Length: 112
Length: 114
Image 1 (tube, rainbow over the protein chains, first blue to last red):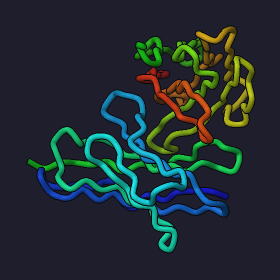
Image 2 (cartoon, chains in turn orange, green; image 1 turned 90 degrees about the vertical axis):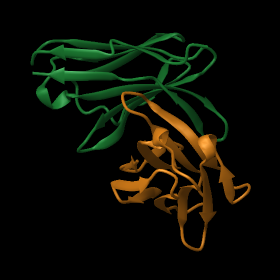
Image 3 (cartoon, rainbow over the protein chains, first blue to last red; image 1 turned 120 degrees about the vertical axis):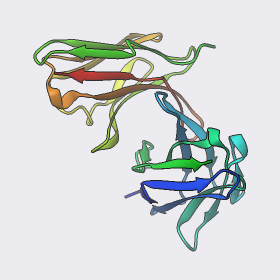
């Protein structure tokens, strides 16, 4: 069955530092993978998606993610953190029944 | 487009009362999903509709929960009777199919049952 595991429920980085949020997936078929962002008191918003095209996927707000089949990973990165990046981030995978399966989420804290 | 609209944004009710949550999806989207988010269980899919027809309600926790979509522009999620363990944030997501469900989430309804 498809699933995702997010490593670290909380991550803190300094403003201007590299952001790295980790996600590993499990899938018996070529996966469709997603990152969503949830700002306080808002719904989830699609940040980027991998649909078996280019392995390096660029999203909104300067985020990108790289699909690595050998490592079964889809980590989210941003070169320089901004205070406005503080939010909760969810990795997700398309399940066999096409439903989106979400990870537990990683809360990103930005230190001034 | 105004995006997905949910009402009310906050609801506080007493145990045993009926609660109705409302959702207006994005025009032209033919899928609608209801999710529940809690700290303990994360984001759970409750039910989803295609062209106003319920497709999968296997995530509905029990018979106290029911959902309807009488037309393409309106859906409700009802809890009767409500219990304190139903306290959560409930999201509606409007979607189109692009080889995957491209979902647009509403702002959510925060439900507190005392």
